[in-house]
Length: 286
Image (cartoon, rainbow, N blue to C red; front, side):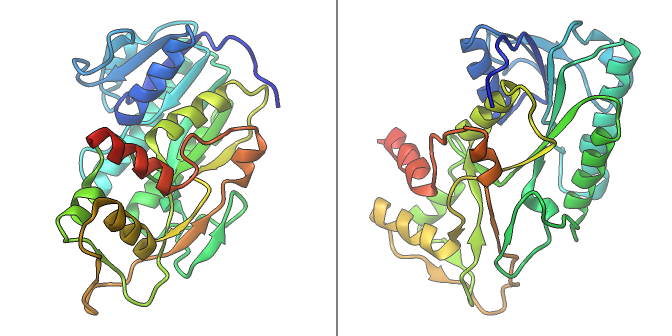
């Protein structure tokens, strides 16, 4: 698949942790990027700031015209069903209505979703063809938003990311460093990750394709057993080895997500596994 050339004008709705990294990559390429947030003080200087609230349709009259791409990556303000619905479903619905009302016709809208939409828990391999029948309100609201985009008149692409880590998201590293990290009994317990810079890189790459598909899994190349990751970090940090969690701790789900489809488009991971990604984070600390 080839690059489509100039990307043009891009709106990042919910320009936060990953959005700012994506904006940095796109502006470095020379594209015009608009970052929409409720509070815009933390946006990079080379991003055109749009102060608006996706949950309040009346604030969306300030959207720019002539958009080529829209990336929706808003997040909830807390962990309950109402807030997830507001951020993912109502926020997206409001943005689509605002674009429709302004007769905007972006080439494609990307919706940043999550592998949380998969309820598989027994180490199954999961890809874009797997059933996505979430058993938690977070995954259900994401699925509702996904269907909302795909049912609209706009060309849409869903990118379901695994657990995102990177600069300033080092809680797992600190847990290992302090000896408080534990792993689940009865493993292996598979986890799926992607570095923030690869989240941004994958989105940028997909924007440049002539005809991206409707769905991609955004995970790195190695689903990794939780205990294996923790032991590797402990060895790298010179920290005590992680402990097995008490038996009474509830068993969590486990699945292995494939990124074959994303790789088939030509995307090359900067951090193909947790080792490269965490090694880069640890190097920054020294």
